[in-house]
Length: 378
Image (cartoon, rainbow, N blue to C red; front, top):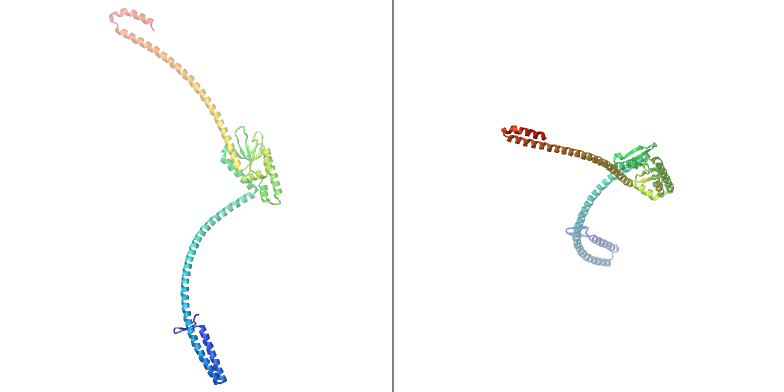
């Protein structure tokens, strides 16, 4: 037990103080009792008891001293063990704190990196939200939606076909204006393309999905599509002016797939009305086919032109052959004339040689002969 009073190296605990107080109290009581009774025998007896109590007190003090010494030794050992354990705990706590600090630092670094990624993603989300809001504002306006689909169709046509092969907002002979008219080669007719789509009915159809209004929305969308297909067939299919089929452009492949999966009657009605429904993907394939037809027509047209030019060149070669024959004939006549001229020159040379060898005394005799010979030769 820890002492409460230390004096000159000695220490007194609470137990010792209590025992001393009890002994003093007993002595006072006994003394008071002796004085109270005034009997000698009892006083001696009390003194005897007091002496025994003093002996017990001395022994108790010895034991208390021994107990205090043992307690102090145990306290010292306990303090040493406690210090050792506290040192070990302090070391472990320090190591744990260092490890925790390292992990926290790493976690904070990773957290900062993730926060950076989150900030970038948030900025992208804000940008995307702005674009979606812009798209929603476009799609909420009927005229803007029509312009959106028309612009997408025009971009595809401009990307795949030459400028001479199409015209936008073309007015037909019946005073109707078509969104796009693709000019096919001679004999095929021009293909009319319509980009208007009943987007309002489609949006109501999507919003009413899995509700009690779904059946009504389906019916409204089907009727609007059939009416639009009928209008395209009536306005844009003109005999001897446009192609026998017209195209209805849908601005989304998802709408195209949904239309074929749920509204096959609309697609069949379009075929019967000679109106083909196309999506951006199928429209690109159609434009590829049209481009191939145009290229084939250009090749055939160029082949006819080449054939005509080859025929003209063959006629020129024939005339050149005639002129070469005539020139060859002239060269033959000239060669013959040159041969005659050489014969005459040889004769002249021969006569000159004979004249040079004639003697002067026989000139008069030979002159008549030379004259006769010259008269007989050319």
